[in-house]
Image (cartoon, rainbow, N blue to C red; front, side, top):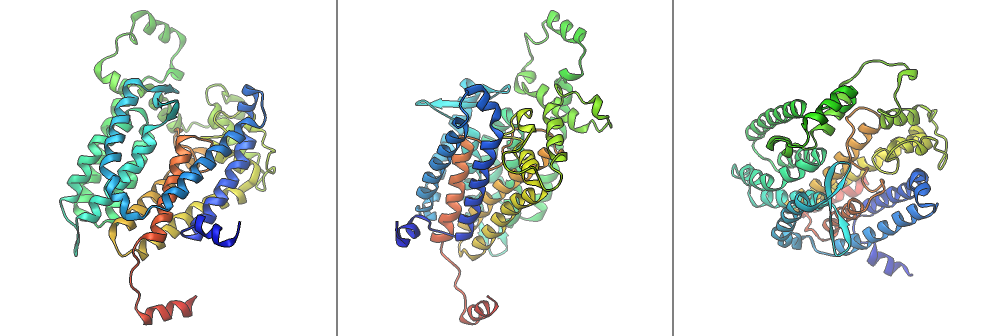
Length: 422
């Protein structure tokens, strides 16, 4: 394959390509190392990583297809993907397949996918389009926030019912996009105030309705079964049917009582305990790729807690390097956005980069015990299906914008200054 053919495939910003390449390489090595439980269940040592590599290649294919689409065409598909997202989110609530007590998957022509993953990108696309369409010389029109909230009202609550953490991360991303899109700060302040009130109310309902079964004694559980408390849940309980899980995670995070190593219950607190052991046993420099011990004991070591395995095997240096890759992705996308003449591609690129980086940051905080346990994978590193492919599409959109978005005209004097600096 000659250089011209390679350049035709690897179009777009080269730094973004390098970040994507490093993330994929780390992903393959760490998923291979962390999939011992899957290897034991399937009896094939290579099967989990080969499947993961296959998904990465599928993601790469869709990424290359996406980056060859000119960014102006992304506007056209917005109404269609909004309808698809709303329909599939309703579908997953009605007839979704359950994972860890949440209905997150639907199957179409034999292919399983998570509608929430598609809906996240759809919301970023819609918000970018609203903000760009209502820009004025003095910032976004005051009507912009109203239209954004209308779109959010149809999508975000449906995500929240099955995946609260995903909904919250999406809302944070949209809020940051509003600030970048120059929504009046007075409106942003009011929205933040109302949002905090809603969050407090929701958390209050969770703490009231939910029951932390880990804190119940066997007599309480037996009494509830006899009384049929769970047989006829109220309407609110049906809406907050994951309240038990959410409450146990909140209680576990807020319980800062110091306990000795002998008091740790590895059955009840297995994820946090083994993640802490993995990090503590890394001895700063790490044990080396493939030498993790806690991968055999840590649930979801190849997904939600893969960052703990990275620290155990690659040490603090490896952990910092992974975090640095996401920071480079964000700042490089910021540079691409700053070069765009039009608002839509700039806001879309920044929205997708913020979505990926905020999710990565939250996954890392969970792994090191600074945030409650959730089901958020580490983008482009954790083993996944829908999430991996969709994240590749997000990178493809950023690359498309880097190559096809109309650039700002730079004056000859400024261009000469930039050349002298470089």
